[in-house]
Image (cartoon, rainbow, N blue to C red; front, top):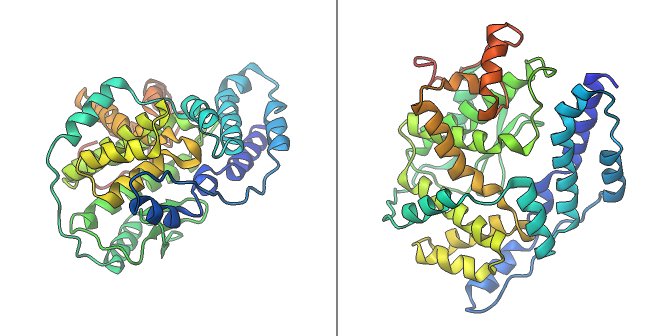
Length: 353
């Protein structure tokens, strides 16, 4: 099978096995109100209809035609992750099975990072006024896209509380009803566009025979860690953001060890999260029964920061959707001119990298 045919088939499988859309409860708001009005109620979540033939998809993954040692080395990990995604979707709402599968797919929280998370949560929170309307944030994001010449991208509104983006639709989404801090006007363009979107755009220009494909879960910690470190470099990393990452880390720890939803929520409330913050953070970690992906934020931030402080060039992380473990290979490929240097570098690095 030709390389581009393999990539096309794997991309098709990835689109089918979208985790967030399939693992986000459809009755979260109803269960939130019941949960917050009770001292003992444990939420019971319902999930979107799964219009997927998982048996057929799993068989397709297991019988995927890799015909050379090079293909096996290159694509085996991606296929393993796709299989785990499929089985995690099959196990929605089955707590014990979801814990095993999520831990295999994303790993479990690092004990040292867990200690750091508890230390961060022990610090007093520093709140800022949220007075900036969403249309101002949308305008700032559009200006940032224009700065990089990304004219095919758009900014639109979406009910999700979190500002995010969809590379397949080339759209950044903002909650129309949310108020933001003044700091967010710089933070969100640097985070969403200066990291996530630029890395994706650069990746699309590379020789994918030489750079391991995106879509593997391995790069998530680098991706989110770099985004957090970008906030630090732009002086927009609010202490509460680190507390948020710490809270997510603690929540994934509890989800992975089998704590109940309420036990997890209670510890986050003890760490001075508001009821809504504690609910949302716990919900993220309990999606589908257990979803440990959120551990990537704190662990990735520390890993990327350590890399930079040791003299590593962050520009090497902009050749595409790569992770820190690939940097030595990236340097060699750049020296041999086998891959392109990053097409787009964020403005916060352009004068230093």
